[in-house]
Length: 78
Ligand SMILES: [Zn+2]
Image (cartoon, rainbow, N blue to C red):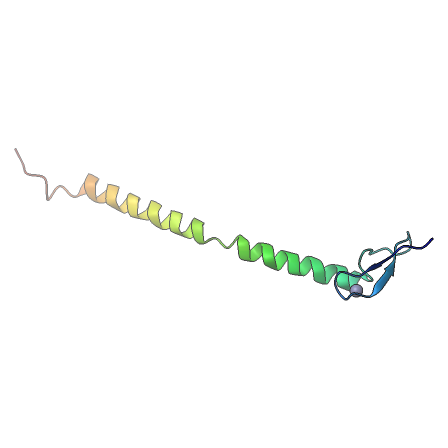
């Protein structure tokens, strides 16, 4: 009995056996292409938009603290 599966990348039939090293892919190329697509997807998801805005907020807070600490201009002397 021989099990054949379609290559997820190019739909070519792959015989499911030990010698089919890259199963379920037909070849190393298809396997790498599929992994490459997966990596692209994961890069899209993990774009550091949140990190950037967090850093900006942190910087704004730091600037605000700096103004409050060092700018005594607005503090009325008693
Ligand atoms: Zn293939």
